[in-house]
Image (cartoon, rainbow, N blue to C red; front, side, top):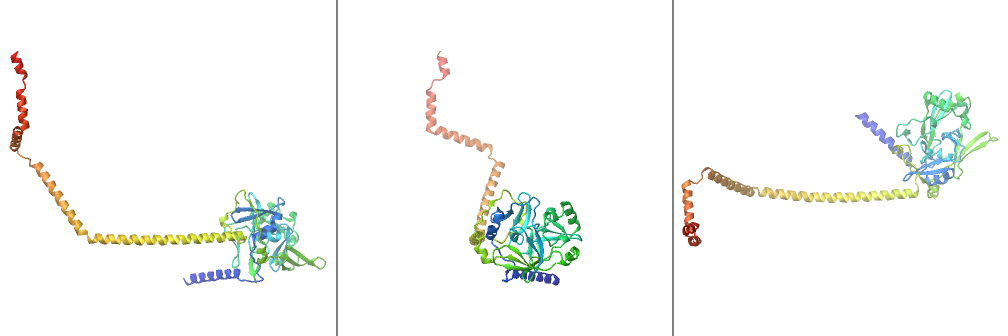
Length: 411
């Protein structure tokens, strides 16, 4: 029992430290909240925004080749943030350092925004001859304490992967350098995973595959390059020295929160033709929102608070009514307890009378009046009829009427 309590205590401490590390202000912290309005203005020239649900929008690139996939056209550079993906595409400084990628059956490759910056968001695989990487899906979430975790079971499809030999790693990659689909299937079965993300000094580090393994199998020396954050909107670029032979540093434009707020614009996104094939219940919604969405959220919260208040008022009224009914029921029970004897006496008396009547009826049926008394009663009735004046008039009228026998006699 003590071990279980100690384990639960340690988990709570880790969660508290995790929340503090995200919320604590740090000028060198790379994880900056970004407005989707800023993303919209920067990515609209290179693709289209699609609104899948209310407040949930995705971006789809245009003018790409059939075999295109994320993290293909560019190069890997070893930096103080780990493996940094330097893209050759104009939208790469946003889509390869924020958010997640997903290949939908209907829309193709789409980018789901997120507000956490990283040198790259990929998973790794490697063996003795090849090294490969694939974009993380929207199911993948990042935590300071646990690194990358998935909200559901996920197996990366074959067409997500980019495999190249070690001697090509670190150079600019082209379509011809990528392994074929059949070879990629074999490599997925034979390679090992190398997904490693961690936080060091407020920075997200993409360790991926160990640099010593890449240097040994690629037979080349890899030097570390510094990443310098710029405050001018210039995307990302490589600064070279020594006659453009050596990469001196990478300059990255990382907007501040104030710049994000100033960059908010109205978002023009077309309504999606159909729903995504992804399970939206398992996808964490991006925390980046425009002012309109924040106002909608505040309105929803106020509506919810009003609804809760009305519900509380209704509950109070119901409780008051219940109390009144309880009082009424108690008073009725008290009155019933005070007058049970009177009502019981009345019922007893009525039962006695009914019983007496039933007994009398039964005795009459069993002991009827004798026949002689009946005859005497009939005689008395006849006498009274004869003695009445109506009976006399009837008798005189009978005497006056001639009978049929008399007429016959006269004849």
